[in-house]
Image (cartoon, rainbow, N blue to C red; front, side, top):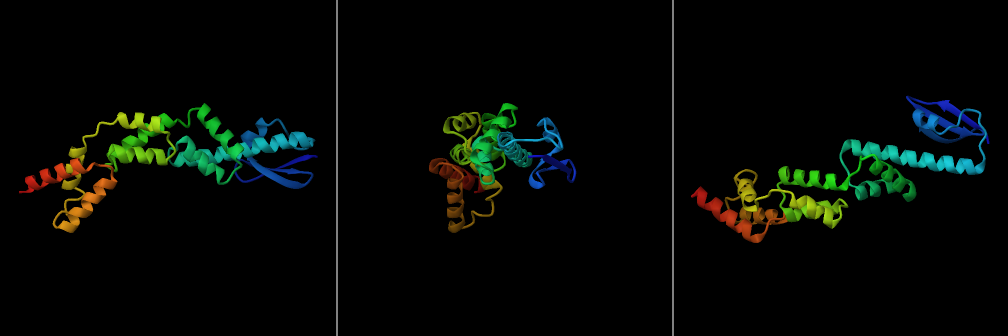
Length: 202
């Protein structure tokens, strides 16, 4: 089979074999493959080339995803598997791990800190969120253990800010209480914080 290439938009190269289009890759990658326009390729070489191209496509998709926001390994892999063969997705993720673009420990620490500061979640809820994102329990526990969270103090701040206008009646108090439970706070610390807030208001 004879390889034919055609310049596409930007840095894209369109690859055809005996006049039949087969794939599109970026220039840098294509030149690294060692093939050129007019080269002959057999079935075995073609299979290997297409496999490498598939991994490259998965890799580029992964780069696009992590450029938007950080991902944990499993979360990224699950997304890639929706569009690519599982083996190609796995190979792409392994490449990103090798160059340090994916690091579950660092990802867990950063996400835990963000959930604490931005969402005001309690450790219990942060653990749930980390595991929902595919972080294993041990790594999640390590990330959460590194946080400095005073549960009652956090609740009091929330009662004075976010929920300041929700405590005027029993319905609002109950709704706030349930929201704080979903945020991972314990019954005891919620009650203590609400009593403190009520005393301060009086």
